[in-house]
Image 1 (tube, rainbow, N blue to C red):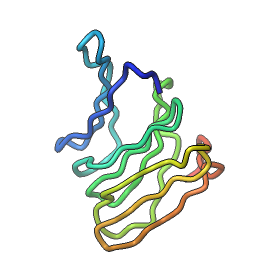
Image 2 (cartoon, one colour):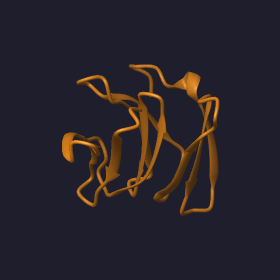
Image 3 (cartoon, one colour):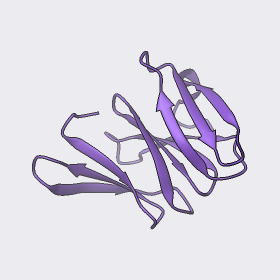
Image 4 (cartoon, helix red, strand yellow):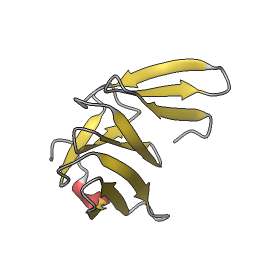
Length: 111
């Protein structure tokens, strides 16, 4: 992502993208049905995890931003982190599961 951008998960089921230099909200990304508490950047992709137990891959460059959805947790996703190579996403859930997701699974139109 752009180093001037900040992503914020909200209690209103959305992710807000902000320009930190201009102090301006750029857009809101929907898709979750409950609060968003975990975020992780991978270049222009933003992964968000929520209380709805879903992980959503967003392409922040695109109007139709949802690229894919990962379903593997049964409780709130409380942690997300991409590895340095950007090839694997680790997610943690409140049910004490750690899931590893291959970036190759994230293609538009696939779930």
